[in-house]
Image (tube, rainbow, N blue to C red):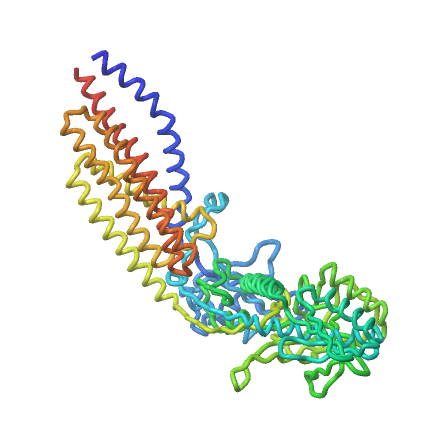
Length: 615
């Protein structure tokens, strides 16, 4: 009797701290899993554009709701905006999947409306205050659009060489390098100089290499003629391609943010392709129009003699200086609006570098014209990617400008909005082509969720029944650990940023349950062996977990290596499966080894305390 009491006291002291730590960890993960019980809903946010506040007879909330109901977009709820934004209306449709169609109808009827599809959480306020959100759903569960874009790096390099060629012509004129001429070749361009123009050639060459550091010069002398060929160096080409891909990824992510899509996945796929997954997107045409656009904006000075010829948007041609004053990459912000006559315009805000360039240029050229050139890539009838540039605006500089000014004479309000969006997100330095497009409807995504969860529940139910029947008391411990494992895994996936649940991810959840049960089976069989050797229940539990740990650890490590490889080389659903599998391994070891061990020992201590009390 005294032996049992002395044994029980150190056991309680030993596991008290570990029990508290496990309980806190499980509680935190359970709380982070709670938002998944409250699915988010898509609302329409309707507001008046900032430049349209002077329009008379702005429709009321009732008028907007009646319009939607008349067009079979039945409104479930509607609220006015916050105190800081009282001019906006939030509308929830009875069928949220019709939000995109309702958005188009409203924009068509009321062009001055700014209509966005926003996601509202339905979880309790205290969960939202903690910053907890449900698991982000992937494309196959939430519906949406998949794009795979090809970035034409060869075309980007050619554009860089063409720019260098045009600027080299200006350098020759500015340096008054007589006897030096520039000519294009297959690899880039080359300078030709007579022996008498050797010093001029050296000066022009130094200026070109200073402006274009990715180029390398190859010199060759034949008779009285010296030729210097310029082309991309091997290292320069590799660095340029990396910069273009990085800039393209950044720009595309900016455009996606401008579309209001918060759960998008944008990643590099292979050498020159980009994969974009847009879960929850209900208007694929709008996303394709914005993401696939390759528009860029540049500002040039007019050139009366020489220069480069550009087409005017309204017909005719104009000559411009080939050296850009500043380009779209220096635009910080852009908004569409209207001037005092109600015509559409785009208001621009430049960064420090662009503002300094604009300030210096306008100060020297007050009263002189400046041209705005809009460029985009498209495929011609032969399937070749061609760059089309046209002058959309020529305006005299009336005063000294700095970081803020406007582009006027836009064709339409929609054209102004699109241009402002593209400029806010950034222009692309290389043409992109959509080589793969796949659309998954919201109904199919909901069906995938239903089928996936049904498979998960069926697998879990059979497993729980088997463990309870076969292992009885220990089986009940395993079942509790199994439920805690699933809760912990869902909570961990909700807590970690960037984790997306896909249909293969649900398969990973089912696999995790199987692996967690496998952990318990290994442990319980070892406990049975120890009991057959005549050990006491507590000693059998201690030895069973201790001996099984090495086997369990080795098995999980090898599986974790596989999950890491899948995550590093996989895309989309494969990556989603790898994430679920890897996180499931962590929670399985935690609940299957540590939590179930604590539960088993707690059950043993309870049984021994009852035995001691009876004694």
